[in-house]
Image (cartoon, rainbow, N blue to C red; front, side, top):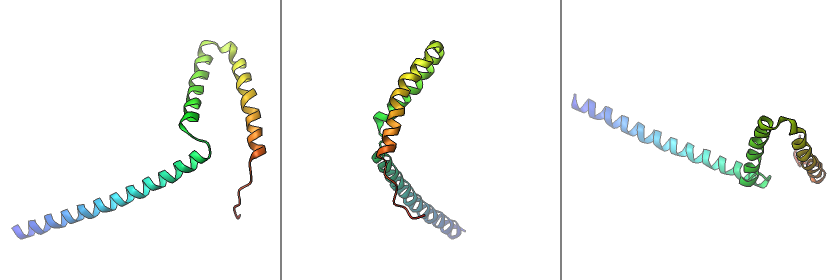
Amino acid sequence: DKKKIASHFKSAVSNAVGFKKGKTEMLRRVLDEIDLVSVKRMSEGFNQFNFSIGVFNCFFITYMFGAYPEHMWLIYLVQGSYFIPRKFLNMWKARPLNQAL
């Protein structure tokens, strides 16, 4: 009876160790993939500063819409005069991807 319990405990421990190794390997692969994605995003221009400006812009527009809704057209005029030419400049500089279809 004690041998049966001991063998059951040993198999449970070995299963837990195997699970922990598999879990560790999976976490390592997921973290490596996240690192690759973050490097790609950083090379495309997504960084902490741009993210912070975008979040601030969302809060600014929300506040202005609530506090001064009559001036929303001015906000959109100022932002549009910056973002629309920037978009066309980025489109002008963009190069097509060399991918097989």
